[in-house]
Image (cartoon, rainbow, N blue to C red; front, side, top):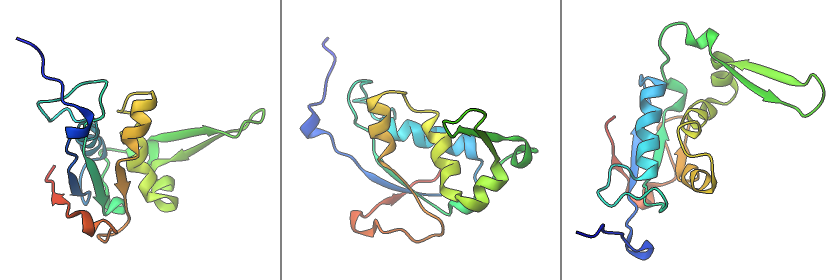
Length: 142
């Protein structure tokens, strides 16, 4: 029996909307990453982007377990000597609430061109409103 390989022009990409209110960050991010890759579809292939579009709302109401609001640290480097900067999850939520979900999902996607293309299908918004009503996204309960 031969393995079925869906042609790129026949792949249908759905739109889903996820409400992140009171959802645990890691559990939500792993399900979103799986959907972005298309692993929930029977036609999944690791070298073809057949994942769906995900719209995440209420990013500012995400939950973290334990003391992770203070203990979880995000690092970045300015490029200068001694220029490492660190930000706690609480500070990141206050300044850029959408980055918390985006960084978690990015870490769960492949580190190559395919992963960067799949991350572009993730849309994260503060609040319940989003500009993708024309795509008629279906509600995804995670």
